[in-house]
Length: 155
Image (tube, rainbow, N blue to C red):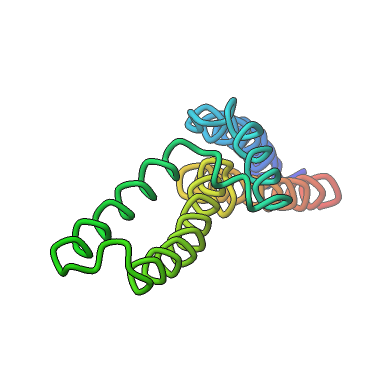
């Protein structure tokens, strides 16, 4: 029996076990690094509700405030130009409201999607990638260890 090969086989199996432990630690670290995890389902539900009924955007406090500020700005400008209450002012307000609603809706959808974790990658993905790499190395070590143990045994 070739004890050198047997020792290589045992070392390979030990490396595999250590790699599996490290992969598990990497997964746990990735999960721990996601501070928003407890809130993601709530943001996903808000996004789903907004997608189902986009008119709900008008009920949000941020929308109401920003729309009011934009309309006041247009009214001040119309007043300075002597067009306050005119048809052109009303048309400008209508165009502004329509454009603003679409822009605000897209912005809110993007914000909720980010908070819900849609397309999220950085920390968690790196942890998952590291865990996958370590698991692959572990499997390779198991194969290496078994091969050398077999050679030592049959040798």
